[in-house]
Amino acid sequence: MPRGVRPAIATTRAELFAALSRSRRALVALAVDGLPLVLAHTVVPYWSTRYGSYLVAFSVRTAWFVPVIAGLLDGPLDAEATESG
Image 1 (cartoon, rainbow, N blue to C red):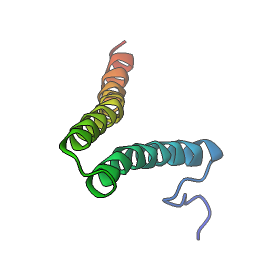
Image 2 (spheres, one colour):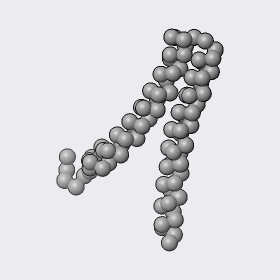
Image 3 (cartoon, rainbow, N blue to C red):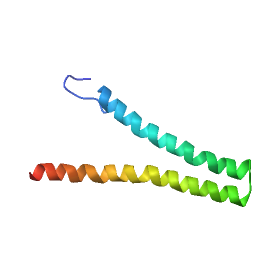
Image 4 (cartoon, one colour):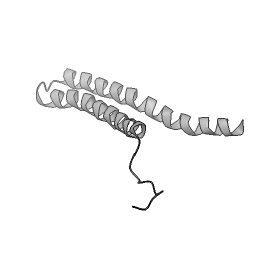
C-alpha cells in the first residue's frame, strides 16, 4: 500500500470502538427482540404469551429505532448549524 493512502477500514481505536458499539447494540436488540418471539411460538404457544411477546418486541424495536434515527438526523443538522455560524 502506498504511503499516505488510508485503508477503507477503521484504523483508530476510537473508530473501531464506535463501529463495534453500534453493531453490538443492534445485535443485543435483535437477540432481546427475537428470543421472546421464538419462546412464545415454540415453548408456550398460547395467544396470551404471543401477544405479550409482540408487545415486548415492539417496545424493544422502538427503544432501539428512535435513538438510532435521532442520531442520524442530529448529525447533519449539527454540522449545518456549526458551519453557518
